[in-house]
Each structure stands twice: as C-alpha cells, then as structure tokens.
Image (cartoon, rainbow, N blue to C red; front, side):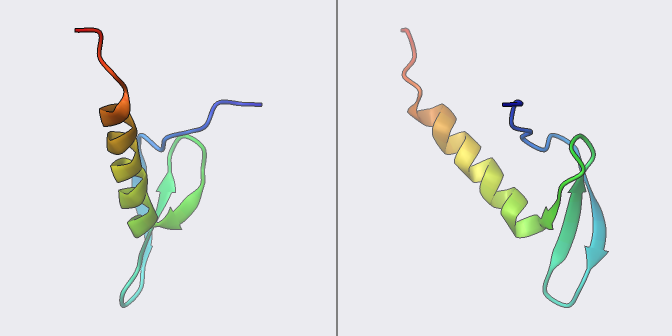
Length: 54
C-alpha cells in the first residue's frame, strides 16, 4: 500500500456559487475546499493527541 498524500500543495481549479474545488499538486485528487479544511483540522487533532516525551 502506498503512503497517503496529505495534500501539501493545492490549487483552486473551479468555483461555483457556494463551493470551491481544489486539486492536489502532488497526487492530482480534486475535492471540495471544505474537505481540505477538514483534513487540516483532523491532522492538527491527531498531532495534539500524540503524547510527548517530556
């Protein structure tokens, strides 16, 4: 199984009245920009849950 792309670089490819679609420049996936925001939130949450070795 290949590594999952976290979509580090995206560009806007289409806009409609209430939606904006972006394309990942790394893997080519196109998705709603709201999903991209959700990915960022989930990633921050996951990082916050990792215990540190203080």
